[in-house]
Length: 200
Image (tube, rainbow, N blue to C red; front, side):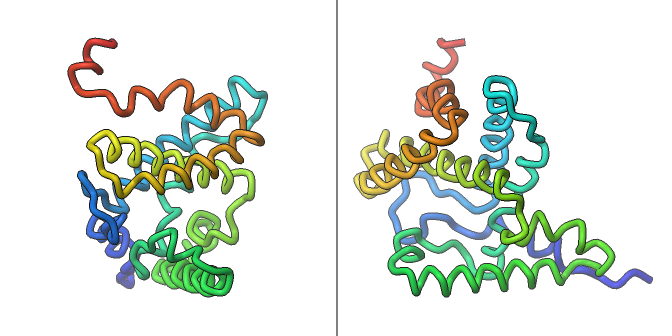
C-alpha cells in the first residue's frame, strides 16, 4: 500500500490563491493562472534565445521551472512586492520563509521522488541561467497584467508599471531575448477581441 502524499493537494489549491490581493483589480488573477502564463513566456524566451542569440537552453525545462516557481505560496499565499522588498531585513526574513515553505512542499513527496523534484521546487537549487529566464518571464507576465489594468483606467497600476519598466530595462541590457519578446508580443496583448481577429 502506497503512503498518500499531499503534494498534489497543495498544488491543486493554487487557483484559490489570489494575486494582487491588496490592490483593486479590474480582472482578478490567481497564482495558478500566473504560473501557467509565466511558463509560456519562459518557454518563448528560451526559443528566442536559442534561435536568435546562439544559446542552447531547454525551453521545456524553463517552462517546467516556471510552473513550480511559486510553490511556496501554497503555504504563504501571495505577498505584495512592495511589502516583500520594503527593507532588506524583511526581504531576507521572507526569503527564509519561502525556502522553508519550498522544502516543506518537497517533503510531502515520497522520499524516492524528492531528489528529482528538488531542483524544480527549491529555488536555491535552480540553475542561475534558468532562474534568470523565469524571473524575466515573471516580470513580463506582470507587465501584461499591468498593461491590461491600465487599459481599463485602473490608476492603482501606474506605480506598478513604473517599477516594472525599471526592472525590465535592466533585464533588456543583459538578456536580448527579453527586448525581442517585448517587441514581438506585448502590443497585441492589450488588443480587444475584434482587433485581434482583424489582425490575423
